[in-house]
Structures are given as C-alpha cells and as structure tokens.
Length: 132
Image 1 (cartoon, rainbow, N blue to C red):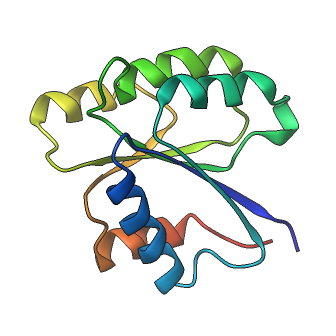
Image 2 (cartoon, rainbow, N blue to C red):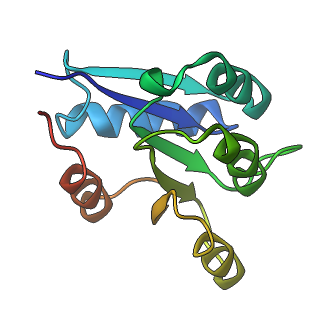
Image 3 (spheres, one colour):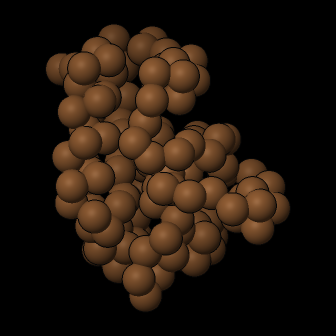
C-alpha cells in the first residue's frame, strides 16, 4: 500500500490544528499517510527545494492569505520545480471572486475550500485521496 503525503501550509497555527483534527476525524490521516505542516511559506519553499521529483507531496492544503508570501506567490515559487502529481486545495476564511479568477490560472489547483473544512469539502478532498 503506497503512502500518501499531505502538506499543510497556513500561517495560523490554530487553523493548522483544526484542519489536522478534521483530517484525523475523517480517517484521512492514518498510518499510511505522511503529514507535514508549515506556518512559514519560506520554510515550505525550502522544503520543496530539497525534494527530488519522486519525493514531492501528493496533496497541498494551502492558505491564500498569508503575510509576506501569499498562497499564489507560493505556487509561483514551487511551480517551476514541477511538483509531480501534486494536487493543491486552497484554504481561505474568505474566498473572493478575484481569488477564484486567479486560482483558475493554476493547473495545480483542484479546489478552493473555505476554512474550517466542512463535511462537504472533506468528502471532496477524500474523492481525490485514493490509497493504492
């Protein structure tokens, strides 16, 4: 059984904790899932730069509104690394129409979720999360 890898990037540690607890409660975070989180986009960029193509994470739950480097700027930094099979799910407390239009320009972005993750969004995420 292949191990799936989830990376969560959000500048708010409370949001990270809530998201992690929701993923655990839904049975998504199990022994067959590698999980890592960052509150600092610069650290997450460094993390991506250290990976080779085969060790990229499968899923990225990404906050849009972060200081210094927002979610879209983060994607601009990692997209040239060609993260193989990475599926990005945007997380935001408020997703504006402008964010939806910007997000549509990124092939990596699969969906935009409102924080905190609700049952509908978790089910949508799970539909992409097949354990081989």
